Length: 118
Image (tube, rainbow, N blue to C red; front, side, top):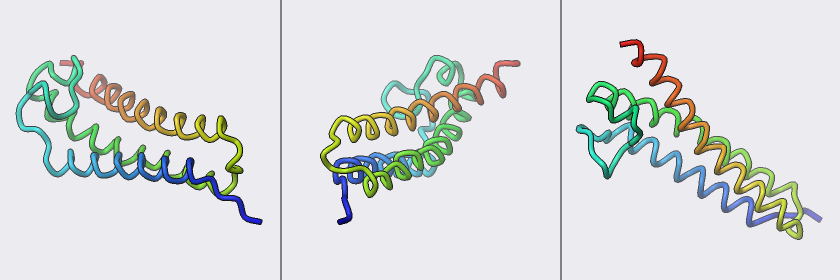
């Protein structure tokens, strides 16, 4: 009998798709000016307009790239039994946190290497 873990599958697909949509939205409609409401807002990205513009491009691409982590993790929903709730929650939480971590980490490293030499 084929087991199907709905918790893993749906949670990871939704998280991955939201990351993908948010990345494409930021890529198509990046915030023009430094603000406290919309866009990738860190101390380094808000340093000046040049940092801000580059940060918005980088985070959009990183979000699109790393949203594949939860999408690929959704395939584990076909392997892991539905009874294993803690493992399911761990996979969902781990894939979501790793997507967010790598998107932010890679963006900050790229900003630092490209602009902090100035």
